[in-house]
Each structure stands twice: as C-alpha cells, then as structure tokens.
Length: 166
Image 1 (spheres, rainbow, N blue to C red):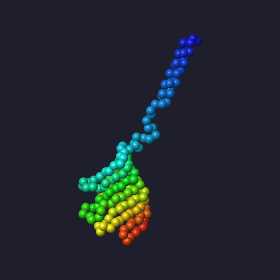
Image 2: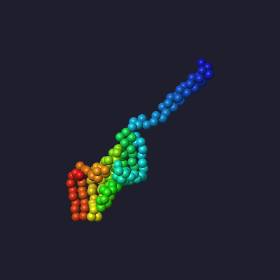
Image 3: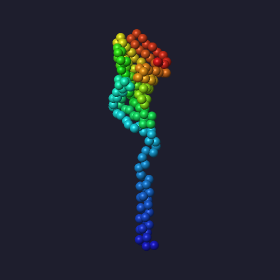
Image 4: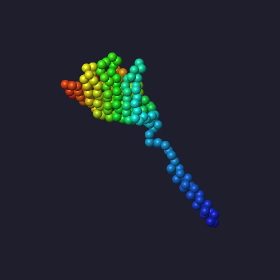
C-alpha cells in the first residue's frame, strides 16, 4: 500500500471520529422535564393588585418571586405578603398576611399560605388582632379564612389557642 492510501485511511478515520465527537456534543435542550411543567412566566420583586368581579381590590400581593403554571394557571409564590382590604363600610383595617410560601388558584378566589403564617389587622375599635398558624386558606371574595392546623388568635386581653379556624 502506498503512502497516499495510508494517508487517505488516516484522514477518513479522523473525519469519522471528529463527526462522531461533534454528534455527541450537540445541544439536545432540556430533556429532563416536559414542556408543560415549566412556568410560562416568572416575576421577581413585584407587586400585583387583584380586582374582584366588581372592579374593587380583592387583594394586593408583594413578593420576591412568583411563577405561573401554564397548564392549570395557578401561581406559586415565595415569601408572599398579602394585603386584603376590609369590607366596604367596615371600620376595621386591612389584613396583612405573611407566610413562607403561597399558592393562588387560577381565578384568584383562593390563597393557600404555608409556613409561619402571620395575619395582622385592627378591629373596628382600633384594637390589634393577630392570627398565627402554619397553614391558612384565604378566600378574599368571600372575606373568610380557614385552617385545619393549630391556630393562635391574639388580641389585647385575649389569647385563644385551638385547632382549626373558620
């Protein structure tokens, strides 16, 4: 075999190895997770004002991070702070509700707060009210909250401990 034949075989083998190496290094995208599981948007350091069906403020949300699931249209929130205004004509102040994590339903009719939930307000007499629990479900359109966990309600002259809240 001549030197040209050997050189041709060596060059052909080098080309095949280079092509194979490039094929292994190609960009395959994110194969570990289906497209439906990725959020369709993510917000950082934001404030949202949500309105009810009558155009009045249902709640205001401030948080460092929110991501929305495009398939079920729910939102997951890190360390949310909700401000829920009182009923129209009420003398009480707005509720400020904080937690470690939060979840908002697709239509915004339910808020699920988890981890060191603290809710603060004042009643019609101007006395402070504090509710502490590990989980709280808030229904802003109905102006109500529920919990199945241990709850502590604190007012001047009253500390109420129990399991569950309506």
